[in-house]
Length: 117
Image (cartoon, rainbow, N blue to C red; front, side, top):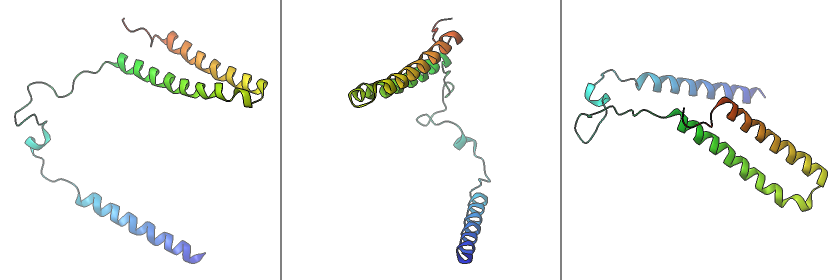
């Protein structure tokens, strides 16, 4: 047991030293304006490289992704219906659909589904 503890300590010390050396040696000391600016075919960019992003579109995409995954979880429930207990299957399905409906109501109530304001 003592040998394992000693080896683990040595390994942790070696890893810590290597990470500290890598952190110290990888620091850039010279900051070049040309290298830190965005590159666009050898020319200075004409406009900002960061375009404005629609938060509404992002929220709709996330909601779609969440409900898409939940539909993928609902489909196998139909396949296991013949091989499972009907009461247990009904209760689990009801809870799952109820959680989905509560989430949908919350999103609707918060106004996340209204595209145009």
